[in-house]
Image (cartoon, rainbow, N blue to C red; front, side, top):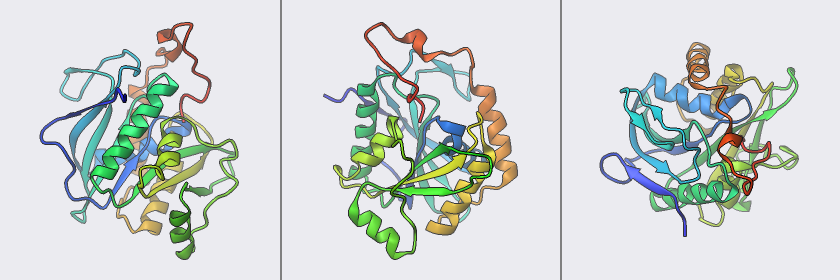
Length: 253
């Protein structure tokens, strides 16, 4: 039984939208910076929360100063074009493999039910300073063929270590749920908030998929500073784990 709960803030379901974007904290926080930047720049509405018992037991104050449970948020963002995108992100992932699997499955079931036209999974890949590539990854033959028909190169070698955590599970299990999902992974030097890689990632998405994100360097840098302010360096995941739980260095993806 999947223990993930979806708590809708108002009515359940998504408004009409052109894409869903998912990202969690990871290397350089590249994907999360893109989502946070969109929510900072445009009008966004929180549609609901994904709640799971394996999130770290760390409640936090929300923008209204109210204490809220650990969660991932589902938001609707209205772009300048008037089009909407759905974003799913949060400050954390579940601290167990089972929890990450269940939340990933819940995201994919939701995407299938809402007939999401395209799911973009954003992440960062640790690289050298001079590396600035964008790697496209997918798990479905038909999706790869569609991308290659548009002259988009799909990586078959990177990330050579694979993908772990929610991002890896969502992307790899998308074929089981018949959701069209694409992994968009940016090279990053791996700093806590690599806003340059985030801007490069958002620009690539805009140019390649014709999604008018219109994020700029100024927006990304401000979002990075805001993200760093919310990150607590004293918050150690292992503090919440018993001897029976194992979380390797792959927790953040």
